[in-house]
Length: 104
Image 1 (cartoon, rainbow, N blue to C red):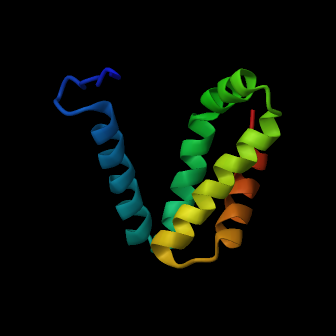
Image 2: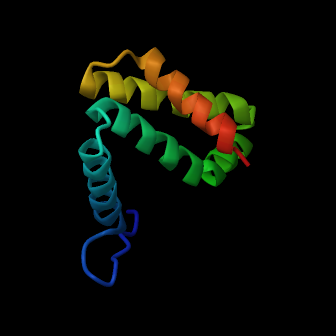
């Protein structure tokens, strides 16, 4: 069974992260971004923060990093489409553009 890490203020790290993402999603929508655009921007940010884990996955599965990256971006685009009705291709394009700009 996987360990659940608990933040000092209470709640699992996953819950804390979800609260933080929700807070930022709300801020973006209050600034005039659509719900779908806000979610897409947050998916891009999470992708960039999670890049070391994607590199690890590529290494462990012996797949090219680009394949693992695109799979993650495609899944994010599909999640945006399922939740907000925005075409996955639009979300994929935006996430890819952000990732290519800030990729390290």
